[in-house]
Amino acid sequence: MPHALLVHGGRFHGGPDAQGVPLHDFSTNANASRPCPDALAAIEQADATRYPDPAYTALREALGTFHAVVPERIVLAASASECIHRFTALAALQGAPAVSVPSHSYGDYAQAARVRGMAVLHEAAAGVGLQWACEPASPLGGLDLQRAGWLWAAEAPPAGEGQALRVLDCAYAPLRLDGTPLPGE
Image (tube, rainbow, N blue to C red; front, side, top):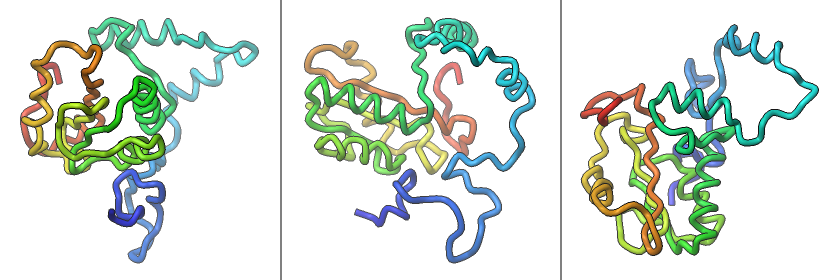
């Protein structure tokens, strides 16, 4: 296993290294710019005397409309890592013995599985409880060479008893370097 510092999404990453402070460091989600003025204004106008709707009903409806999907398909989390851990926890609670991840992928997929005692496989395989796919490949930004292996399950019936939960991570879609985008991208 590579050293944690070398793993994209590993537990320790970002910041200065032997070559100094990087001009742009996308590994930490640090914002090199000031806050978005519209977002800052919305925060300043928010009613801080009440808790927000825990189901995020209005936000999920607005996002569903914007992305042309039903609100029930919108999953909100504080970060990508939280989302990864929540999906992995769900698979573990459903008895998943293993997680399938692409060879080149965000390190939190494997880390979330390992903390739950799940095996980590680097190929699409029957019997896993959770399959991660990246489109485009993460962190390479191009066509995932294992894409065909990930898409074999797309023609299978929807996940049910004995079938894997499938999650397609499109976080790098705006940074695509080559390959064919998914429909609707």
